Picture 1 (cartoon, one colour):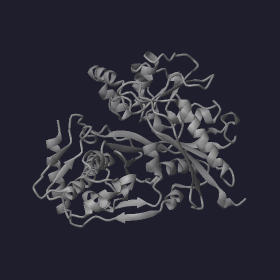
Picture 2: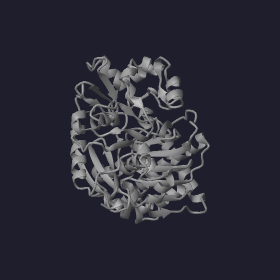
Picture 3: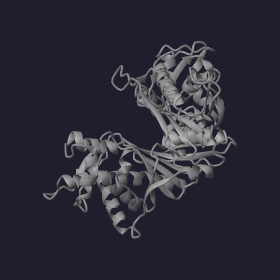
Picture 4: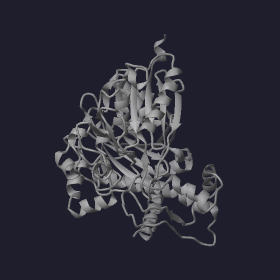
Length: 491
């Protein structure tokens, strides 16, 4: 048995499936296993998961990876789809209702009601969030008051990380970390504790909520009844976007990451002091380390980035596969004055305008497929700049660099334009599975596998970097024209 065989497992429980990934210390290729689970749509706007099916997918992928390891892992880290609400019985370990997924909109009328009652300022100040059905608090309330879940000593409420931790530890540990707790609308991000007044407002019993422990630190060990090898420490937990920030080694204030997925999530490390509520942005706990140090982040949500490329493919049929967008967009030097604002579902950060609609402006007889494709790629860079500009202005934290992952980060042209728009270097890592890496790093740090944040930084390897043009005149001119196009799409 060689010390080089040591590894840490990341259990990455996403919205459509679960992946287990073994991250080796010697940098060899990871061992990975993935399993999808069903999605349920009982009514328009409702999205549910069966928590047992999530656990079965987790169990299957963990078993598969453990069987292929040369020696047992040093630790397990969990990262998860955030805000999804689970209710289960402590005595039986069975779910009491299907989990209500983060995408679910059933509590929108309740959020409107709370807003009319004047609850928003308190929610903003204490949680860093806005009143929206996205977050877990109103989902827990719905489960108890309309979902038939009984409030008694047997009740456990939590997000997906807490559910998986409970199952892994054989029902011994009901806990979560501050990054997940900060997405519930029940947690005071300054005192790092459940807020009695918010719990009272949403009629959520505090006795049913998990204990909040540091994101990096030992939560418990796997139990024989879990069906997984017993005695493995579970030592890291973080919500998926915060985990990706950690996996990108964004440990200093001013370091940021953007995931170019269907939409995009930009997170900016703003250091250890919690900033005041910021218009158009969410304030969130990034992570808490074992020594109690808490790092905060500002989060910008952009609803449509990769989805705009899918629209070119499926809606307009300008391209037949997503891979064509790069070469087509790069075949022209500019858009010829065309701007596409992809506000298909409204605009997210920093505008938060649900009534905005998609717009194409500046079309002439000379406009063709290539100009529209390029305008879509450019729109992604502008949307990210809008979010980052709002974050840096509000927090007073200067952007150091932007680390990127997700599907569209393969587009060199996009990343060069992103660098020009932001005026900072954009860096793409060799390993794009940054969410899983973050969970592994948090767990490994707690168990001394990586002795320090510097040791984790040394594990981060560059694939490509893009430095901005020294003269920002053109970038700023293009961006000011973009803002005019955004005004036309709003309301």
